[in-house]
Image (tube, rainbow, N blue to C red; front, side):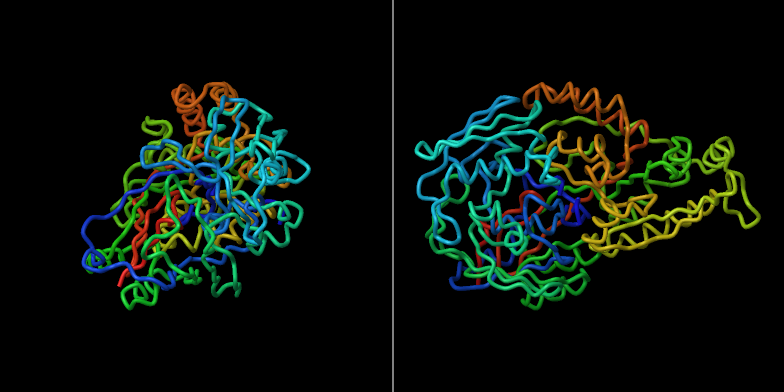
Length: 532
């Protein structure tokens, strides 16, 4: 598979995601308040689908990148306000074109060898080299980016292949593998050559993954200390697709952590289980605009959106707990505040949808399905099965609405690897209901512009000249100075219905006999504490 969040992003309860530094929200009083930290425990976490290959430079699957956080550390982290704090690096500086990082002393790899500046530079160079076809190229690292190292000074200097408004956060948030791993990608696919808090000790695909804590690990976020009560000895990821099953296992104590969507949240909250929360895009659509696909016609895209009562579908999707989308980035603290969505999507109007299809040449056939030039308006819509129990009924509601407008839509539920395979390889889809979870507005660029699969990650074949121009302009503006331009770029996508974001959801990750922080849409490994 050539192309496998984003926080970027797709995140977690979503199909794809891209990881970078992000924020979290925790619950207040819970059952662990009267418990004490305990030693020697195993933290068991549910994941909704198998992660597949774990190489952090060759995947954008949320479930894989979430697991990679336990195995591979990044150069910097962010505190709760979005301020950079130490990771593998103790010092850093950056503009939109260059960045430098100085490594902490005493960092070792999982095999006991020291982490060098040359190792880190090789990580950056691998992604920056277009010949390697890393899906992180253009998301976190611009193609053509170069990195040099001074091992004696423990310093890495990066020259970006293109201006990057968020170069510090993008380069600083990359999962870093140790030296041998850069040339042994098969080993990285199995989680080897790590710099993180845990090492991979057992893999049983589609069942469980076991990780063991490194006793020499002492370089966690900021001023993190090695000797702390309650750190888990092991972490086990269990593949559990059904969220009701995961909720039951949380209550029985067989699981210590699980992200729960749907109605099962209520009974877990009633039992006062600890939980961390994050806002994620739950309702978002893309149309396949490849040549020959119906979605390439703006009139068809508009009619398909007009045929949907998006607020009602959003209620079904989020269990009436969602909020209207305001932009493509949801992770707090957001790099850019503002609203690029309101007023951009067409209102629910079935009559207008039918009229639009009529005008575009799609006439009702004998069976009610529209036909143009002898071709039926028969479409395939894909959705992520790992997104929880509300995804299927909301997709079915969309299917019924599209049928009323004259479109025959076949639904396909796919797990994360299956979604990636269809979007980035086969291209056999017309409508994707898999949201893209982003931490920075710049991370959308390779997904909504530029090369299409298999050469790139622009899976919907979007060619929006206004977006491309505005994003290029914003890339030259460091940090939040370009926020107005980034928001205008997003608006250009939404007005043209290249992306249709309509509802966000607050998704809790519950803990049983454990506490933790939720960052990047997943549990922060160094924050896990076991209680009993």
